[in-house]
Amino acid sequence: MHRAINRRFAETLNEMAADKVDSADIGLVIGLYSWDKITKQVRFQSDPGPMDKERATEPSLKNFALTPRELQLYYGPVLPHVIQTLDLDPTYHFPYARVQPRGLLVPVTKTGRTAKQKL
Image 1: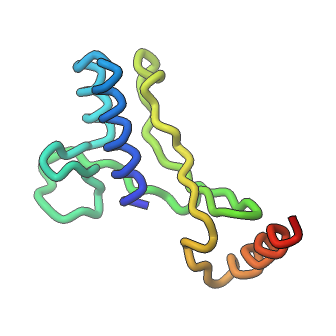
Image 2: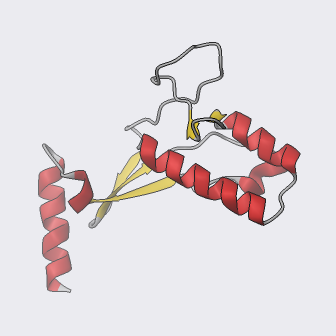
């Protein structure tokens, strides 16, 4: 999940720069996501390193949805209303083939594969 968030945020920053979004707004979004400009990654609470810098909250596995084809996880800070147009899509899609399901997900993914094969 961390990799997906980092990838999406880096892509979004590039899009913002290409769209010539106000640098103050970009700076605010960078701060809200605890983006480290040097490592080009979000600094999460579980990451190693000095704790004197702001850290992003960890993604919660409690915020999810199961569809016939994928696991969807949701993550994103709430942006102030003045820059909500810069909000990232909070849905992260993980096809069951990528997540290698275990436990309770196994029957769900088998059902999804069967339904896909019938299509």
